[in-house]
Image 1 (tube, rainbow, N blue to C red):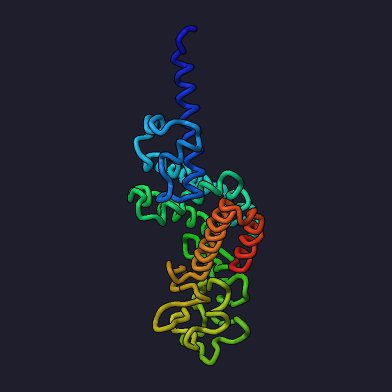
Image 2: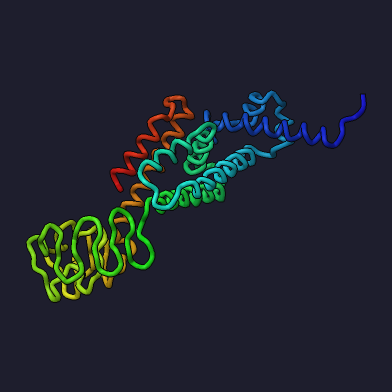
Length: 289
């Protein structure tokens, strides 16, 4: 019998390496990072203990390769949601994200984030990837846009006309519900957003200027800070951190991400088929739209 060619040796090498990684994936998902041993991985793939060590020097090395693969897959999801996606798109997104074998890989990411024995640099990469995924989900829903106009859900329109919600900004009269302010007065200039500054969400603090008055200079204030339906509107620009659309987008992203990761773990453990996840994500998106 002639000796194996270099190509044949390489094929065998790749086949064994893949077998080890597949076996390790199942072991880590079922037993966790701390509960998995090289011997169990070897038993699962039908190779000797020593041969597994020939391919991977440590259990951590196997785990790192699997988690990095999971992180690459999660990062690729970032571009799968269009900007200004409607609520139903988030349901489709989650349904796509938890197709087999993705739940096992998401379970590995959670394992990397929560176990003390995981290499710190790997945990950091996992944390950054999850944060990036959350940011992508938030952006896809239509958070505040540059230039001061908050985009999502009937946000402020530059040029002085408040959108959905019906609070008129132009001309200087606060309109939401017909009142300048609940329990308050329209101050100098008489406008909820004098000078035509649009108010995100359409009303000054949900129909009333915060603190009961539309402040001088035209921005509704609470303790001197411009507020408009949860969105700051000083000079017409949405202020980061105060924008209602941005807050809601962040809450929506956290809720959808929690559903995605939770459904992945439940599906990996065999306690759910994950079919609830798509509907749940759409409900969360709709509720916080």
